[in-house]
Length: 135
Image (cartoon, rainbow, N blue to C red; front, side, top):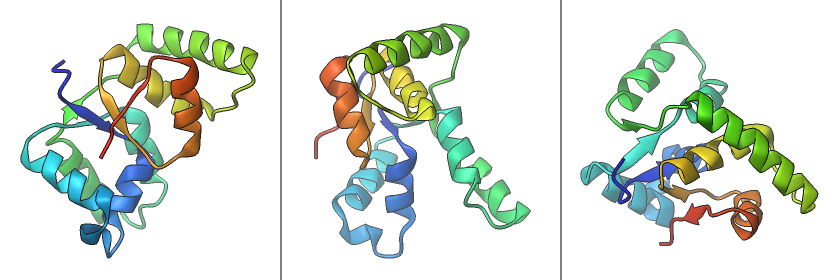
């Protein structure tokens, strides 16, 4: 996968979809990345976003929209690496939700930058080679 691509965490998508996101740093960056065809999604992010969907029509819209982006698929090796990463993080005293360890591991495996607004990814990046997108 092209290492110029950027994986968007659920937190970034939620911020992007807020009413006034066009005026936020994340809103501007996401729009820019979409125009440049640099956006990557992964199944756990779609799963988390589905939790906030109110009806089947909106769920279909979400799936249709997200089918336009690059996919960092969660393969068996990523699951195994996520288990190892969780072990390492906990031994270092870093607590991160399991699904975010999986998302972060996908970013590491595919050599992608990660856009997020969750502090625990910063803690992850102090222990693991997670590349945080700077804007």
